[in-house]
Each structure stands twice: as structure tokens, then as C-alpha cells.
Image 1 (tube, rainbow, N blue to C red):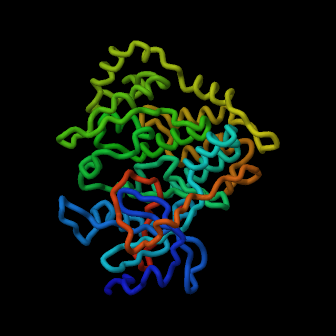
Image 2 (image 1 turned 135 degrees about the vertical axis):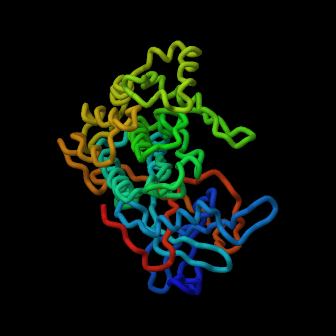
Image 3 (image 1 turned 180 degrees about the vertical axis):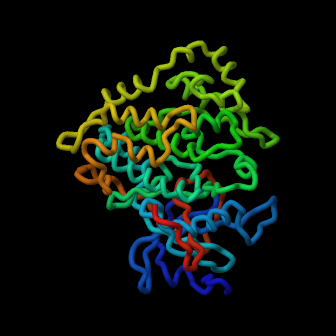
Length: 400
């Protein structure tokens, strides 16, 4: 095949399927080990064919194609690495490195098993590695647009890797607004206020708001802004997410034009006045500092674990990430230079270093491990990494 595509490879010749991991919007993911010189563990994603009504096509969705074309360019230690793509029997199989954990799994383990907080050095390492990967993406004009704990992979060696680039977008001189291609981006609890207020020309700052939400969730073991999502109307127009905006205001207060000069230009700006009028208590927000100090005071840390709770530097970093005005919000480079990382104990490249907690392995089912014949139902996004490499030597972007 022209261009170096590897259509002659067969999945079962190169990999032994261990079992089924999860299903997502675009397909199903399986755990595998290599055969014939392929050493290590892998996750294989099988794309389902694109559908329109009752007609099934042999191709894949436009967003999946865009994802594969974009991710073929990416190479960074904190981005999930894609090994190859295999074209077989009108199916596309993406093979990427296997990660034993993700942040959501780690958070759930702390809430369900021992109720102990995640050790402060682990949180610092996770954030540092996450921001390193995000800095690489942003320097190469890529917005992730769906950062959340389920999409942040963690290897057994404590390496943090950004996964699931299914909503990622190259943003260098776009021909049209980002809104015209994807009217809804970022899972609701991690969606930045400018998106909630209808901005159609947003920036990579939306990813940094999501990092702030992830930071808060690592501290408290629950989403900081846990709103209820309003669904699309019959005309497929995104509604104003009133409940989610209210959850943010309850802690952060109502944004104003003095602190956010472009606020009044937001399409849903008038909704803020209605929110305040209908909910007088929103005029007395809890305050992010109060939320942070109360969270830290209530946290329980296991004996003989490294490090103390994050201090004032942690609060200051969180405030910089959860800044209403996207132009004032910390970018990835500024965040990495923050005193939270540069003062005191430096972050490590292993977020499990010194941690005695043993996290459970990812659940793998062997009841549905036939990758060639399994059906491909459309389901909610699974949060598994969707990185892809088009089966040919890829031109590499600069290292971040």
C-alpha cells in the first residue's frame, strides 16, 4: 500500500488478546501481550464503523480520522504512546502502550478502601507530569479539550500520561471557529466558565481550568464542581449549563467585568444576572480559600507516609488555575514555574515513590476477548486513551 501503510499485518499474528477492558464512543479496548518479538503489554482499540441511520459504512467517523492524523505527530513521555495501526478486514486497530491505572481509578481507591487522602508528594508529581505533557501539546498548537481524571493514565512505574485525544484539536490558524467543528467539548464538571458562557473563540486556557479541577479532585477525592448536565435540545443546540455554572459560583462567586473585562461579550452573559436574581445565596460564595483550607483540615493521611499536606503555595496555584478570566489564568509554562513546584521538595517522575498504598490493577474481562467478532455498541466515552499512529514512520514534533 502506498505511503508505508501496513495493511498486511494481522492483529492475532502480532498480539495475544488477554481480555476486554472497556467500550467507548468509537469502539472497544482490549488488553494484549506481544507475539513474535513484540515485548510488553498493550491496549488495542478497535474502531467501530461509522453509521448513518440504518446504513453502515466501512469507514470511521471524521473525528476519529482527525484524531489519528493529529496523534501520529505526537511524541512525549507524558503523552500515551501509540505503537502502530493495523488495517484488517475493513477494521482499524490502534495499538498503544498499556497503563495499569488512571487517576479516576486511584481516586476511587482512596474513597472506597481506606478514606486516606492521596499523599501530597504524589499529587505534586501527578500535577507536574500532567503539566509537562500539556505544555508539550500547547507548544505544538494542540488543545486537548477533554482533560479529566479518567483520561490521565498512570503506569505501574508512576509515570503520568495524557490519554484520550478524541476531542483534541490543532489550533494553529484555524479556518473556522472551534465551535463550528465541536459544539460541546470538555466533560461538564471540568468545563471552563468561558465555555459554559457560550464562547466560540476559546483558547488553550480551557485545558488549564480542567487541570485546576483535577488538582482540587486529587485533594478532596471528589469533583469540586459537580453539576448536572442539561442535554441538547431538539435542534441540537447546546443549552446554557445553568446548574454547572451555579456550582462554580457557589464556591468562586459571580464573575464581574472588573475582574474579567470580556465577560459581557459572552453569549450567555445575561444568564448570570438571572442566576443571581433567582439564587440570592450565590451572592455569598463559600470562597475557594475556605474550600481549600477546609479540605486540607479534613484530610486524613496514613501513618509513615511521605510529606505533609500542600500549603499556601498549593492554594495559590489552585487559584491561578481556577481564574475566571482565561487571559489571566495560568498557562502550562507559568504553572510549572510556580513556587508550589520550585520551593520545598521537588516533584519526582514517579508519583508512587515512597507510597505504601497498593492500587488495584485495571479490570480485564476474559468473557469478551474475541477482538475480531465482538459487537461494537456505542456507549458513553470510557476515558481510555485514544492516541493513534498511522502505521508508518511519523514525523515527530519537537520535544517539549
